[in-house]
Length: 261
Length: 225
Ligand SMILES: [Zn+2]
Image 1 (cartoon, rainbow over the protein chains, first blue to last red):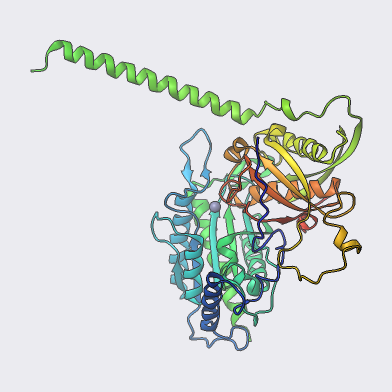
Image 2 (cartoon, rainbow over the protein chains, first blue to last red):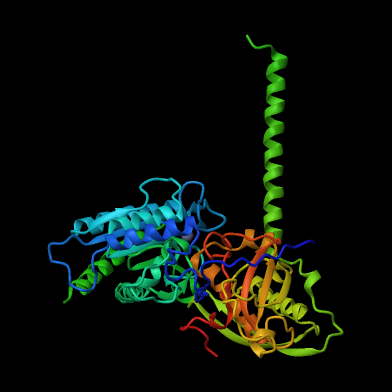
């Protein structure tokens, strides 16, 4: 079989990104036109961001949380539920969870921005665009899977970069990786507090890698008890409610940490 | 008034279409079961004449998101590419076994080929590089000592039947990268193809368009001996 082996110089690599000098800083002067426009876009987006971390926001400032219900439209995501039973597409689960968490957060005084409110396709770039325009203090990308157990938290695997440096669109998250890991830590402890099994990891996820905010991908898996028996099924409304409540509690804790002088 | 013969014809056609859909459904189910069983592993078995050698597998575990080191004695062919394929085949056989901690159907037949190539020089490297006779300049062309890029060509059936999820897909990618690096230390980078083509993701999540750095593929929290 003829196999075409084309090794293209792709922007990043993961598990740790393969750093190439042409993608980390914005080579505005020497970059091709498209790249230059991408750089200018991220430049303007970064310029629009407040000087986060330099001064704590005033207590009255709105604390914005972006909820990104992954998949949607043609992209159904994984199939959830017992293979023999009627399978629920991941896109429906993530949307329902996003709606649930949104109302919990809104009730706690958060300003919530969602990347989709219905079953529509949203590109990774569009998701990042919505998140970056929202000027958010936390961006949660919601996934679900039948594999594994409990809650899987993933931060970007990009190498942390200096926040002051300008970054290409595809690696905008690099400047936020440290804070994303802190957010994952807060989520980990809050979910653990709610007696949930949590695993932590890092991965290369294009939608997260372009987000200029503390961002964590959260994958909900069924809860397994001893002997790997399912104690919390994904289609169990009680389990969904527990997950949503625990996530909202974690964000409340994150707000408290961010606002600490 | 509908003539009687038309009613009978309609009923016959209706019954026939129901029967056909049931048969079709059963065939589809059987094909799916066959795919899940992943029994067809004949083509990648290492030749029996090859001497048995120690191979280190980094086996994924979905429950705690870890890679577990497992040492096995396997008959391994002498050429590096075939060795890599045999070792990865064994790894995927473990995943296809019933009660696997990281269940993925397909088994050894899912690894179509593994190509080992010299790591390509960065295209943005300065023109005034090291002199041609220096070790750095010789390394990429030298097949004996320089770092290698492993291109793992997976079958379409493997990608199609891989469970979807951030954790499960990431673990498959990580365990393949880590296992390659553990057995062939010169492999520093890994790329994936599916049926010889680049593919966006493995099953909706893990990015297959990237070059993975094999040495860093071991998650920090896993790896219990
Ligand atoms: Zn997903």
